[in-house]
Image 1 (cartoon, rainbow over the protein chains, first blue to last red):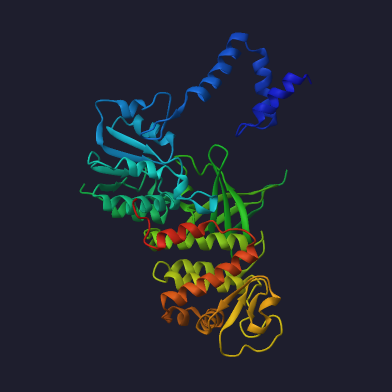
Image 2 (cartoon, rainbow over the protein chains, first blue to last red):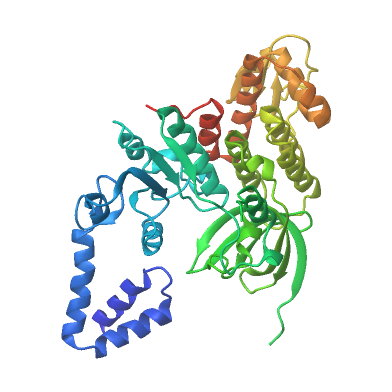
Length: 196
Length: 255
């Protein structure tokens, strides 16, 4: 096998979810691809590395600093929704129902996996509480043990600062099935019930 | 091609990590198969029926299919979520610590029914049981893992321990009389009361241990002695300790 081909296969193989066969298939596809398309792909990869950075306010990944959400004029700057990962921001933005700002922790507390509170962007979140602009912080961590632990930890940190701390409702998802739901989900759904 | 062999077991989820696009790699602790790893395929998909049944520290019933490398979770149903501990940050800190040391003390596949029962009972005792429940868990885990410390005779000279202040040696695996102090590399002082507490945690039941009233200093001494012993045996840092300590001291304090 020619050296450049072997080298490309090796590099693609390093990416998550790409095994040796997939790496080979992708390589041979790229060989048959027009030169221009290959160049565009290579440049897009380089651009991501050069231009993408963390927003200094909300820690989301962005190419402009502050990011488009933090810089927008028509958003409620007194409301911050704290999420685990940048993809969570995307999911919430798709709803078009949320008009506040975000804060991305880049992980959750999971000691056995090596992540403690100091590994997350918590200090940066506390920094945003100074002054009295922020009146509510929504904790939007995933409804599992690590997410709940992170939410409880943040709640302890934020409540004394006089800001309202809320948690996303948890319970049955749309399209879910009561019959298959687990005990914790049903408990939370019952706790969070509202007037019909 | 042979059909996958199915088997059932209950188990507690000790670890979870993401695998591939939508899968979860679980480490389960079970009563009859000991520690085993299995993949919950598709558990991270939005419509997954399995997702809520394989949360960290949930006790669930599993239907597993044997695979060449890893077994696959075919079905899972949570039978005991230990809801009380999930709403309490200190209890979560303690539970994460216990899960980690259990994971480190157990080899794959070694059946250890008493250790499994101990884990289940201790998770039920949180949050009320507090630190004493964790001390009891630590000592009993050492006992069931074959590392019961010798609390009655000096590990060097085998003399019976006489009343007074003694030493505890992690490297020797038990108490040391003052005469033998220089014989072991890892040694710390151990007061008589601390020795009595350790003996009770070793031989008494949880009912007795939970009724103990100890001063903060004595509790701290017992905790440090056990922590050093466990650190020595595991030969590595227990990562959950710093989080458990943080949330226990009433931290976090905002800067």
